[in-house]
Image (cartoon, rainbow, N blue to C red; front, side, top):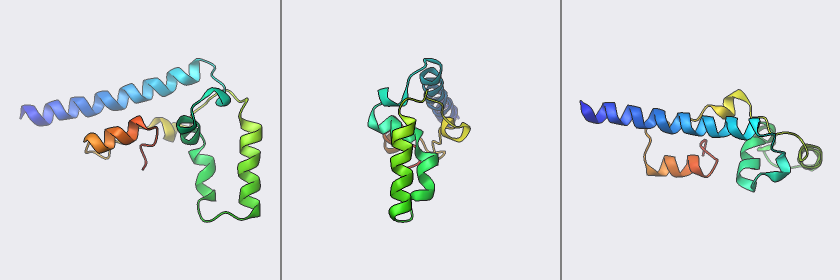
Length: 105
């Protein structure tokens, strides 16, 4: 019984630490241009989701607008982006994906 209990605590700890880190970035007043590419991609994930079905001229224009207009914005993650999904199976591969700022991969 100790192993499932330890695992549940570990998984909860990882989720909490990641959420606290995202909240820290938000509270620090960081601008989007100051983020590494991985974190900026994660921040823009909700905006880029509709563009995933192939890139035509309109979609390219949306990406360009997002990049030009969003770099000086203060970082603010959506509620869904703050929810770290460990897929109820926090193993090394999933922890590595979370650390790479892409827990939905």
